[in-house]
Length: 209
Length: 238
Image 1 (cartoon, rainbow over the protein chains, first blue to last red):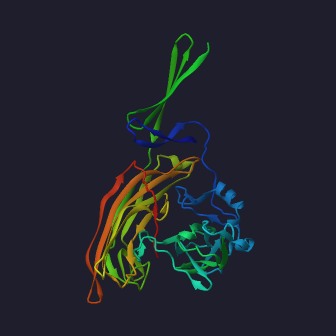
Image 2 (tube, each protein chain N blue to C red):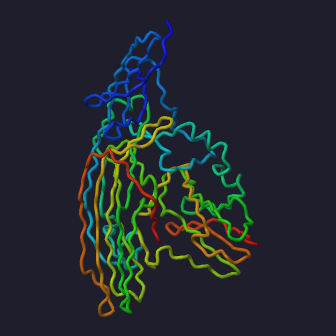
Image 3 (tube, each protein chain N blue to C red):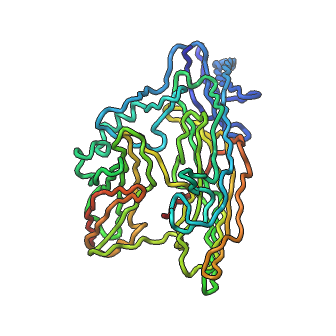
């Protein structure tokens, strides 16, 4: 039986939020999203945690709209079609990219970096997220700012995460919050995962007045 | 006769019955209303937490093997990891919604409080109190919710040489959310597990000792309509 499905959120007078799915039996159409269990070759979808849906049988599918979005994004292209991604060597079934919206920044401006960790095999791969960004200036490795003064390794959620084939995770970081970038000059950044070991290429960024 | 729109109301009847009431009126003052009622369903599912590991002080923490850590679970024994807590989704019932559409369950974890107290060799103390989203939203996609598991094993390590006492106490709210694959839809809370862990260590005779520890589940497989909230995210520091 085909069912018409509609979602809504209604707030009652007692401020209790209810959620529901309304079923109108007998109406013969379906507004559910189109899905597929096949990702086109040479396309990598970004898994934001909501990428995959699971059919009652357990089959993993993706919404076709996600594929259409990815087809328009340079971030979803194979590494050899995306030189600006600074993709590193394929290592341990994974490949890591570090990219910036631009490579010359005004001192004090937010330096936003984007990392992509990609599964380049046909099997699920596990790694510790997020990758780190290493920084150096004039050959000197920069120390990270300690965000809460504890000087401890702290884990509140296990960092292991699984990437399915033809998918990638995306991380966006404002580097000024991680490193002191107040000095003008050239900085070298590199994304790095230590478990398993995967690195991006090194990327040069200029900060000036 | 020209009828003018007067009102549209939503009424909640007993149980999950929603009624839309449309009322129209004529220039002469007559009014007519029509009411349509819909049955509203809410998925059901179990989300049960179990404590599988203990609080330990050792170098056998999966996140940092070889480094001394205070951790709740996450110990590796014969190649198997015993997590601190396993939160298992089971018995999903979507009332037939998933027959022609997609739906899924997701975990969101909030740290409702994290308190770390440090005593240094000079006698000074430092206390850090924080809360917020635990790293990522969502924490994990649990798919169909049929036997899928979210596990955690929090910990701290890499103790500086000028620390002589460290205590850590954290409270977590782990919420199972339901999401339908439809436009403009948001995940909604289904079940909640509240849990905590704590541990204190002391540096005596050139060695760290575990002086007290605890781990507990305070609310398990609890129905909830409350959305998890936070104002900032707390990220692992590795």
